[in-house]
Amino acid sequence: MKTHCWEFKNCGREPGGRNNGASGTCPAATDERLNGAHGGKNAGRACWALRSTLCGNDPQGDLAQRFKNCRACDFFKAVVKEEGAGFIFTVKLHERLQNSPPQKQPA
Image: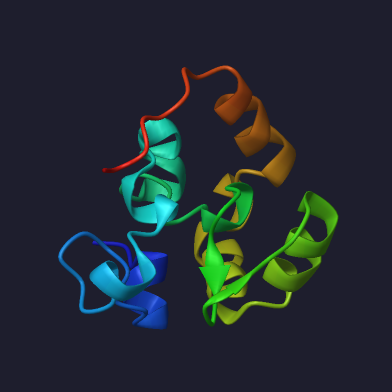
């Protein structure tokens, strides 16, 4: 089984996680539009493609700033290495997001 961002970073923001109540549930753990990307559950192996994800509890800003930060992330680098030639580039992930119906936000 492949590791998801919330497991790798041990952030506790997955459903039922220790920081779920205080910080809210991370959209990477619940947004189904990228389910299966890089063999992950929801956006758990493509978190850099989503808005509203946090890194160290800090918002990542606009797309350009977020991707700059994410490219330096140890999890992003691990996914790139693990996926090799099967890595799905961010532009393709964004196309998939735009062509999917919007997700309902957790209550």
